[in-house]
Image (tube, rainbow, N blue to C red; front, side):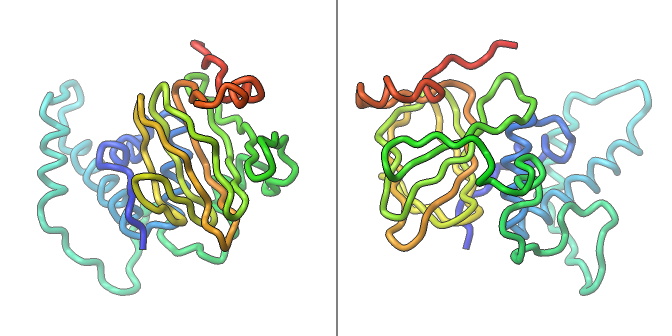
Length: 228
């Protein structure tokens, strides 16, 4: 069972199409695995359309977001079996797919053809282009039982587990979990012993390896992000 999900503001911005591309990719990857968030997105889109239709063309109320949240907190009627909203996002389960559709689309469907960089024997990463110049996005793979060296975050990072699981000092994370790390946090992700772990990650500032050796051999992870 999934334990970690995007908060309501992430989902609201995703439904409105206002999330930066890299963060939207992370939410889309999570939605692939999470029925409850897909349902929440569907409700947000319906409520957004309803508010738009009742809004005067030349006015925007400052409390629109608060009203939207009040409606979300109200009990929602259960959909009848077999019904499907026309604007529902990824409404059918896709567990048979190897990776989320959004990941397959942006990587061309074969991640082994990406430009991977190895860091030691158990960890590799590949930069992916999302069109978001303010954030770096990448796929991270940790071999079973391996780890990403201890590091701390210079900014915020979103990680979505795509395969396997990993743990750190806080918890253990499974496929579909949407994990947010903030500036100053330090951790050492370790993959489970029984399966390789693949993650999608996006960050708005470089991470810094605690060990000086890894700082020298990981120029991507430590380079300044573009200000464009």
